[in-house]
Amino acid sequence: MQRAVWYTSAMQPTIERYGSGHINETYRMTCPDGPQYIFQKINTSIFPDPDALMENITRVTKHIRTKHPDDPRCTLTVLDYSRPWRQYVFIEGARTYDLIERPDQAYKVARAFARFQNDLADLPGPRLHEILPHFHDTRARLAQLDAALEADVKGRAKDVADELAFVDARRAEAGRILDLMANGDIPERITHNDTKINNVMLDDTTGEGVAVIDLDTTMPGCALYDFGDMVRTSTAAAAEDERDLSKVFSRKEYFEQLVRGYLSEAKFLNRTELENLAFSGRLITFTIGVRFLTDYLAGDVYFHTACADHNLVRCRTQFKMVKSMEDQAADYEAIVRAVREGR
Ligand code: GN1
Ligand code: MG
Image (cartoon, rainbow, N blue to C red; front, side, top):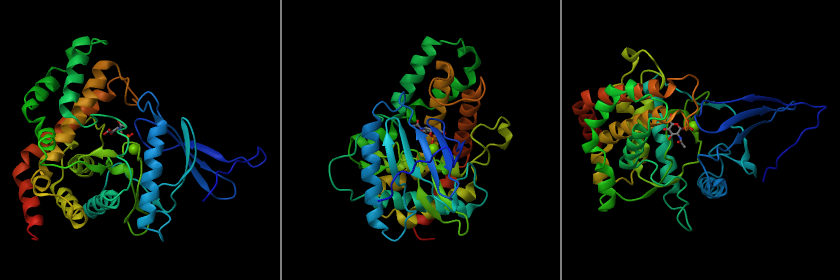
């Protein structure tokens, strides 16, 4: 068991803000004698029960370690936790990407997340805490949007007529996965729930997935939402906050590699899950666009923002991504079919 290390003022470590997460505050500490640590302040206005969250992370990381006993980098190592701060070992020789540059990276990302789901499929003991209930519940997210629109606390509703029309045209599809879960066609699994591309570390040399990180939302969920968020972020040709929408679209060759990488490991999926893989990309991208729009209307109270219209810009990129996936839906479905049939 590694232990937390503290330094005297005579040997000052350097501390810098780290990463591009929208929720927690993250710092990297580099110590004069070499080791590096991640310090993170859990955002308790979003995660009201950090103790339960850390209990989940401890169980999950311990279990993953039992699956890869010879690989010290296979998951996060919690060194210390004192609410709301925690300390992790910094995973060396690997990095995250906000945007990927080659389709083979999509393959590796998807395989890493599939392995994560696979590793946790037999986690013993009680059900994990449901850290954020209804996290990917698109109907609940639409209800939050409607409430924020009604309240219109910043007088921003006038700016978003096009985005609201975009949402209204897609409300009918919002409950598809929820209904399939409710009637038992899609099972509950242990899922990550925030599988954006920058939540997996790729090895600096081999490019292989090393570890899945940001485990705050690991809880009971739906495998399709994890796959959907990979499609949202790994196929995107531009950043989540790109203002020039002509640069924003979903890249088919990346989608293909994502499907190939995911299905190479995710052997547990049932037929209904497989049939909804392409749809899940559109749905989760839509849902996250709705969340950005809601936060814009609510006055930027949830996601970290760097400028007044940041959430609106993010919403627009998400909706452009949805449109791009809709335009390519037949191709995306054909890719899933081909990979399922071993072509
Ligand atoms: C947040 O913390 P970060 O940046 O990895 C958010 C996700 C969103 C994502 C959008 C707990 O993730 O749900 O998809 O931003 N996490 C939480 O980029 O709400
Ligand atoms: Mg993150």
